[in-house]
Image (tube, rainbow, N blue to C red; front, side):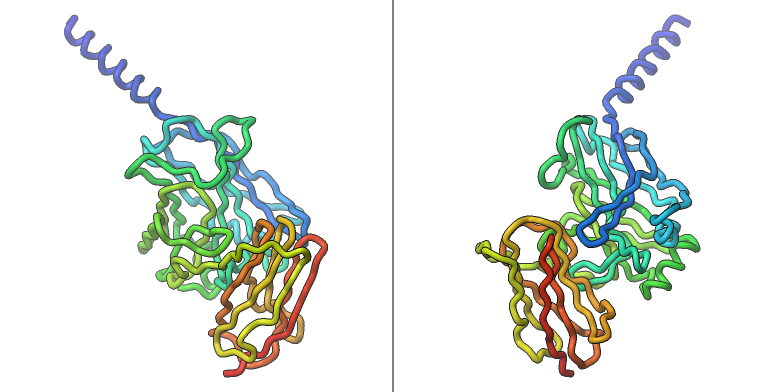
Length: 310
């Protein structure tokens, strides 16, 4: 009997030691969008879980201005987020923001000319009162962050509205200069679409043909004023290059419109440092005609016309 009690005690002790070694992820789930240069956000959920445990995005009925995003949020409800056990060596605090949303459409805005169904930004702090960690937050070797979206009816509706094939989806890191597919893996099954990533950062979900390394080239030159150059070549088919400059950091959008004023593509929607940028725009799915491309940042708005000839 004594041996049995001793064995039971050791088992409980080892179990409690193992539990104590699991670090805590303190989370806040938010939803946010821009109107011009003004940013609006709301907190949907907050709490904590242990690494290795799964957090499920809760059901929520959005109200007020955020009610415009109910169809989008319904599509990603019951998504599952977790970190592999052993991924981190410290307690962390994360802000998970479902962002990049368009108040007019209710869906995520395209990035770099590619439509998205998910724009998820994760900021990490190592203390509740510390600033967010600069750069990406990496995990221990062979451990990952995991995010899985079940293919329920609301998700399938999202795919239909956005004209996506639910069997042909992909995820990428979203950088200030473009997409990156290194260190992130998409796993698409009949029941869910999932990605796992080597670090916490900003993530985009779109079609399976999203590029792995589309880059907006940053030129080491800071202009004295806001600049938007004429695209070249012009006329073009199907690709053209646009160069723009911003003299100070801030939120930047670069969008393409048809001559009736309808938005066609969002090429840039991000916070960028002062500098000069070069982006290649490919208009595979657009008809021949005259289009307007418009740069907006802080109090500056610049636009030029370009001609697509197919």
